Amino acid sequence: MARKRFDDSSCSVARALNEVGDWWSLLIVLHAMYGTRRFVDFQQQLGIAKNILCDRLAKLVDNEVLRKVEAGEHGSRFEYRLTEKGRDLFPVVVALRQWGDKWNPAPDGQPLDLRDRATGQPVKTVTVQNADGQTLTIRDVLVTEEIQPAKDSA
Image 1 (cartoon, rainbow, N blue to C red):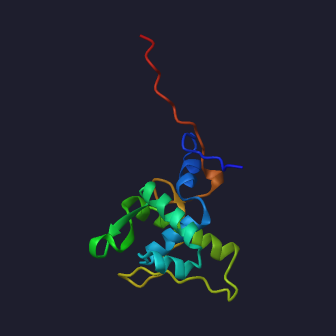
Image 2 (image 1 turned 30 degrees about the vertical axis):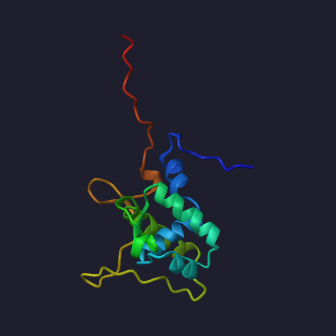
């Protein structure tokens, strides 16, 4: 049975998951954020089968989350680098990490210690905030449908 695709969905979450929603893709993006660039390094670090890695890298390149860059002589070697679109997943990945540390902690109970490179201070928990910087919960947010402009009947 073919998996449903959400390319034309009006739900932005569904469309985003269409591009990076499987766990291999997000783990590849995470490792790219850590500086992994080469196919063999992704494969070794993730323990992923070559065919699955090849498929996910191609999908991430097609969706412009990664770009494939020639890194060897005569196209003999390539690297995969995050695009701006891929780098914009950083807060999503951090939020997922923080959620996982809270609700499904590592066996040793120690979360990864994320710190600001410039100050050495711990990274705050990712939150949704209002325009004044106050943290909001789901109970504080009203979800409305976007109003579509009226089409001219002329």
